[in-house]
Image (cartoon, rainbow, N blue to C red; front, side):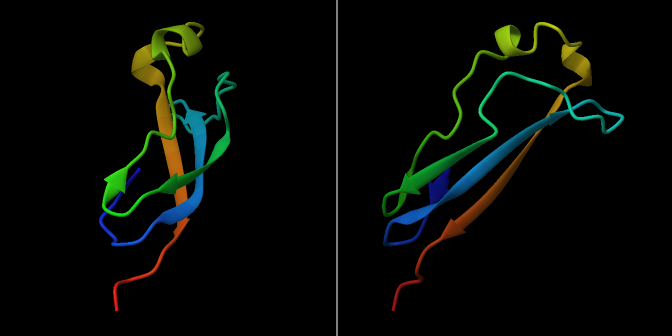
Length: 76
């Protein structure tokens, strides 16, 4: 997650894995994580080894959808 705001930002990132037909896959990763990003900074929200967590799937038929909701303040 990256923020270009001058103050910290916090929120939630969600992760859902699908195949190209739109079927949701049962992948063993977190489904959501709370995060905080410092001013003008970045932070990692998901760390996984895709070859491990996707070993039961055809890698060319897997898509990760990541949703983000964040709260922050614009500079005044």
